[in-house]
Image (cartoon, rainbow, N blue to C red; front, side):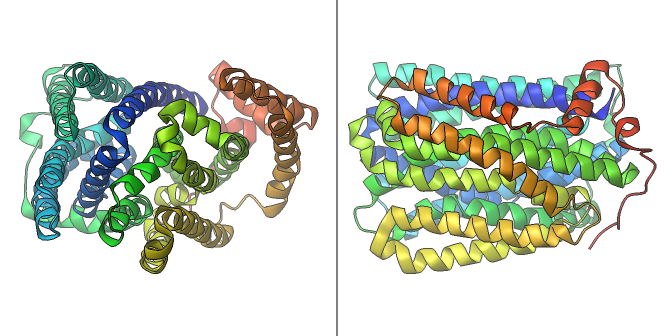
Length: 506
């Protein structure tokens, strides 16, 4: 199967999954926010942010490392499954203990402490599925991931029905996460055993191959460090904000609720982008080992398509933010509007910033990690200064500023690699996308206050018509389409495909 078709199939599966998960999550978040109100919803989202941040601080990096190494050498699957899995479970247990201690020492109300404990337990269940999921991704068995993620979200949605009927408080909503993630973990374990240990179809893993040893754990933990640093740095741009608002501003529950109401809408879009990135990673790794020209071509197209999709979303959401908030959450969350107008541009910049994914593929994860850590530290420092005065608006603005900083620095570093596709390509792209986006924005600005279900599709139609008139899609896009439809390898269409990969590391 051609690289393009594999990308397309994996992306379709994962994005379709993420669309369903995002829709289920939006429904759950909308009704939870409306039912609980800004104060209790603030407690729930604060606890989610705290536990997610702790889970990433202790144990992140193992899943992306496992994905990269097993995608490059599938015989390494037993080693990473056993030792990476044990490490991830141990780190999840540590994060559970630490967030409980933090909430108690900070003097939060007993209800908030209980919600933190329950959500930490739920996140521990979820963290345990990360290594099996990375193994499935490395073997491009996306269907098992799709079922697990949809099942978890669907269980939350079913639980939501009980929560609304029986008038659950915030603690009851926390129990829903525990139940959904616990059942999802049971499913993942069953599928892993059935597909790799009991099935006679390749790939097959025998029980004798799964050996837990301390030296391997140390090697894996050390190799995962650059991935962990990058992941924690990126996560702190989001999750640390809610924790800092809660700790630094008095009577902050409603503020955290407003901030996270906006962030949940942005997260829905970011999850779709992340799904496509995950599906592309194995192909990037393989292209790095076979053809510099192919890897450069793939990077150029990724940047192009992400910008084409993200920029109009940023402009449209900025113009329609108040209507989005009112429609989704109701008038009690109208203070979320300014946060959404700022945070949507974090999504736009993050979409254009394909460089962390590329640096991981070419075994220069440390480069991206250093930049992301610097931006995360800058974010924390700015938050310390600005949150006490400007609360959640400052948190949104500093997140955007630091995302821009990371994008600019990584762009400069990427330009120095052998895979740089050139500034003229970027200028040519923007000379088409910006006018098309401007045409769409003017239409949205001057259009009567029609229903969003009419305004958004009409804006999209206008945007893509202008893109087509400006001849945004070229011969390279046609070659990708040929490879996808005909199942031909991409390399003969762009060159010989025989060039060697770049340097092996930092």
